[in-house]
Amino acid sequence: MMLISGLLLVICACIAGALLWSLAVHALPLWCGGLAALSVYKAGGGLFACVLAGFAAATATIITGQLLGGIIHSPLLRAFARLAFAVPAAIAGFHAAQGIAAALGIDGGTKVMSAISMSVLSALAAWRGAFRSRV
Image 1 (tube, one colour):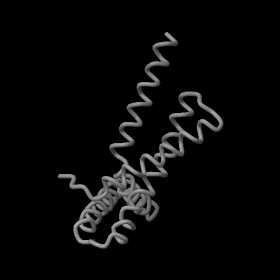
Image 2 (cartoon, helix red, strand yellow; image 1 turned 30 degrees about the horizontal axis):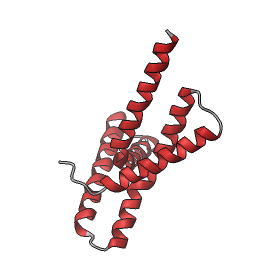
Image 3 (tube, one colour; image 1 turned 30 degrees about the vertical axis):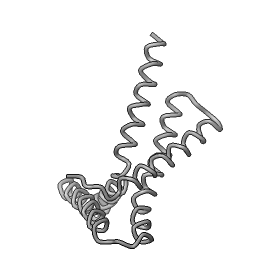
Image 4 (spheres, rainbow, N blue to C red; image 1 turned 135 degrees about the vertical axis):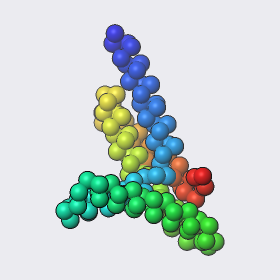
């Protein structure tokens, strides 16, 4: 039974890493949507208003990113726009790797090194996919 649960834990960690890699570019829209929903909630809005504000902010962030990718031709400005998508993905990757390492029982320097490498990988995934079409 312990072998099966350990194997399932490793499989779930691999699936979580694959999801993190494929969804890294959506870290900035998710953060903006969550921030907008929390702001509406703190202002006294209801549940529907919070969900609507979060969805609108996340959608606006994705659309703005796509428009910037089509309009900006300067390599330096494109790098700054891509960096705006990569930084939240790196933070999310770091914390996701910390959680996965804690679930696997990894501690110490190995936990930190795996978290740093996952943050770099998720930032690279967001950098690569920041201006791709999502249609």
